[in-house]
Length: 138
Image: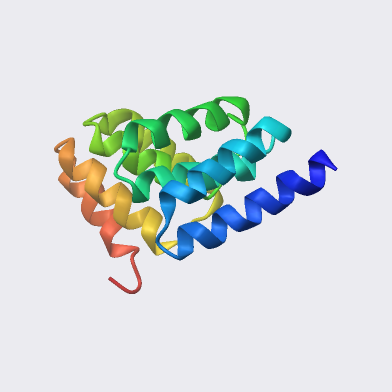
């Protein structure tokens, strides 16, 4: 029964986030985590709800934990973590994460755009221009 309720809370939290009710969504995600503490989908979605609330530090904390647990397996949500790091001014670490995402998802325009941004912030204009040139639909 706990697994069923956790799945229900995850799904409802996603719907609430999409409906513009991130506070309610976070409550559902928190309950889902009480029932299934290792469900990374719940944590990722809670991080997205936190971002909707403007609580970037909480989102960063959630994603940092998942990233550390899966350090060898690049995932699309790492893009969000890279952007959060860039928002914090940690452009070097953000670039490192984004390059790992690029290695796995080279065709993703948003990865190249994010890399162009972080490289520009580090004064690496030539590399930034190379990344921007990979963006097919700016």
